[in-house]
Length: 372
Image 1 (spheres, rainbow, N blue to C red):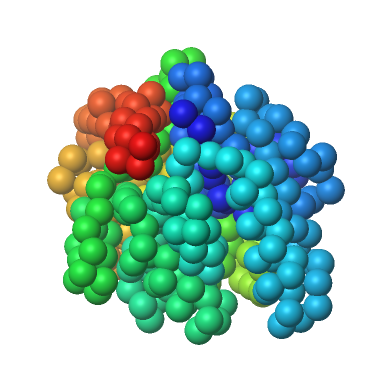
Image 2: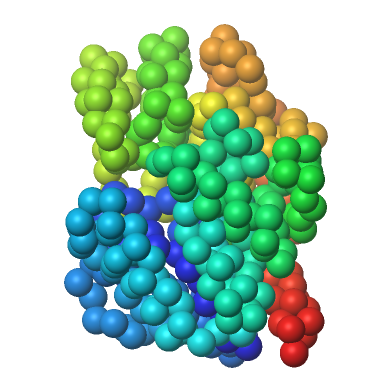
C-alpha cells in the first residue's frame, strides 16, 4: 500500500529541526505514518521546501518538496509555485491513497487532484473549528471556499471526537469515522510518583490558548510550582512577550519559552498536573503525553466530556474551579492516585499508536479496494 500525506508544515516535525512551527496535526500525521512504515507500507510526505534534498528519506518516510514558502509574486504565487509545485509533488508520490489534515486551501487542491487522477482522498480534522464556518482557520474567503469544496468531495472524513462528527453533520450534512489521536508506545515511560511535581502548561502562545489564565493560577496558588513551555505564534508575538514579562513577576512560575519538539516530552516527566486553558481544540496531544505518564489533566476544554466521564482529570468552566481543582489534587494524595490509575488505564486502551494506527491501516486498505 502506498500512502501520501499532503502535510506542508510537517518537515520540522519529520526532521526534528529547531523550528517553532510544530503543531499537533503534524505530530499526529508523523506518528501514523511511522506506524504504517513499520507495517511495511510505502509512505510519502509532500511538504514545503526548507532547503532539504528532494526525495530525502527520514525514518523510512520519503519526503517530496512542493515549493518554498517565500517563492513567487503576491497573488499569482497561489497558482505558481504553490498550486503547480504541490500538484507536481503529489503526482510524483504516485500513491494509492492521499491524506490531508486540517481545514485549509490544500483540502480543495488535493480533492481536485484526486478527482483528476481517480485516487481516493481522506480528510482528517484538526480542530472543532474545522466544521464551524465562522471559525474555520483559513486566511481568506478564497481559502475557505477551497476548503469546503474539498471537504464535500472527500471519500472519507475522519474526526477526532463525536462532537466534531456532530458539528460536521449539523453544518455540512456529512458523516465521518471517529478516530482518536494517538501517542507513542514508549513502555519506558513511568508513572509520576513525585508528589512535589509541578503544574505544567505546554502550547504555542497565541490568544485562543489563553496563557494569561495559567498566570492567574500561579498568582492564586503561590505555594505551587508552575512551568510554562511554548514558543510564539506567527503574528502574535505580543502574547508571548506579555506572558514572559508577567512570568518574571511570579516567583513560583518558570517560563521556559520555545523548546524544540523533540525536547518537549521531558518536561512532562517532572509534572504532577497538566493544565489546558484553550477556548477550543481538536484533541490535545498534551493530554496524551500526560495520561501516558498517569498524570491527570485540569482543563477548560473537554473533548466529548471525556475528562469528566472517565475521571482522568478535572474539567472546569472558570478560574476559581481550576484553582480549586489543582489545590485538591496537590494536597490529597489518595485522590491524586485514583486519577493516576484511571488516566494510565484509559491511555493504554484507547490511544496507543499501535491501536490507532491499526484502525487507520484498515480504513486505508478498505478505501483502496473500492478504487481497484
